Image 1: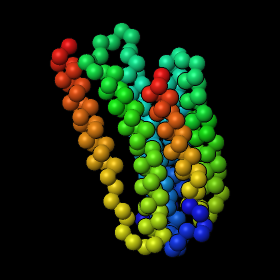
Image 2: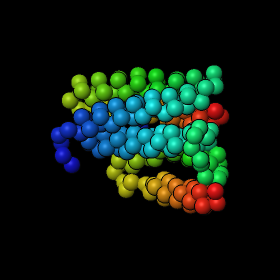
Image 3: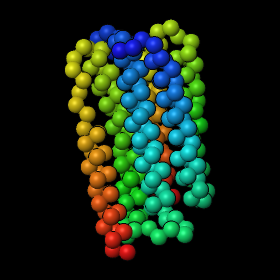
Image 4: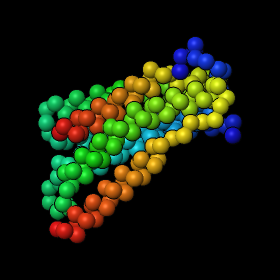
Length: 88
Length: 114
């Protein structure tokens, strides 16, 4: 496996994921129901996680593996958007 | 993963590859939700096929299912790399392909019936 650009590829993947989360949450928000704003919790959470992870990847010479709890929070954020979208 | 996990920390490149796989599945789940919400709710000015509500809900449900399943697969893959054993089989691609095929078939039949 190539040693170069792994960090950069992973940073880009985080950016794409956070952006996708925002798009989906905004689509869900357009349903107009007041409580669909709950879906915004997901992209905010994802953005915070993505920024922290990107900073770590950019600064560490040997990046640590993704934390288990962080991965669980990310999956939960995705499920939250899906549930709000289902109820909307 | 927690530092007291069994085995040894794998090459960081493999961990990053596993992480990118998780992120790709999460994006797939988001994509399904993005498809499902407008379908389930209806789109003004556009004639949707029969059962668009059910198809939309199925897409959203699949997205909700993929997120925790992808997390589980990520954990299992990370543990397998730490232990130096073969990566576990991943049923998600087959599940995704099957459900999407069923949704597509239902859409085609629903469109034909309109």
